[in-house]
Image (cartoon, rainbow, N blue to C red; front, side):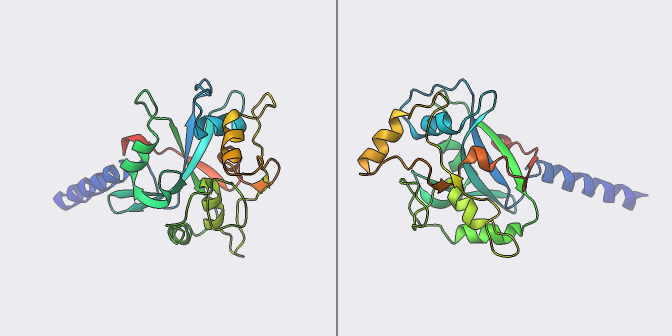
Length: 219
């Protein structure tokens, strides 16, 4: 009887420890969402992405990152202006995306179905050290956040599970956010409206993804 009670006690502790990560697994995607009412007049890339990809009545997804769970540690692999393509602790990721008022944005965790998650994570890590793609163009060595995910998550035939589609940089009212005109003007190019690419809002709607109830900010 004592052995049976000890077994259930150990099992309970194991389940409890696992639940602290809210079910997060290596290869899960963490989408960063801004409230619909978030101030878009900040002159930042996040606000411009929110304006271009947001949908009325929905959270505006402005970034996506890849989780790697290693023992009791959670690492993040993503592409940002601050770090380029990089692998860093979860705390760094949370600090990077803390809002101006000190709160966190909404974090939505989704799992990719039908792929080798460990292989995807290793593939993502192989891109670390590359620069962030400020031009958002296909077929160069630099990568932006969803482009990193697209190149890392391949099906059994080696093709990306997330397809490219014409990129939209316009706000919901059909106007071009001033930030994009400024940014691409600084790069000496036109806004690449309509060129193939990916964005967090559309990627999150993929049939390959299923949402999981992980509480990122409380891990």
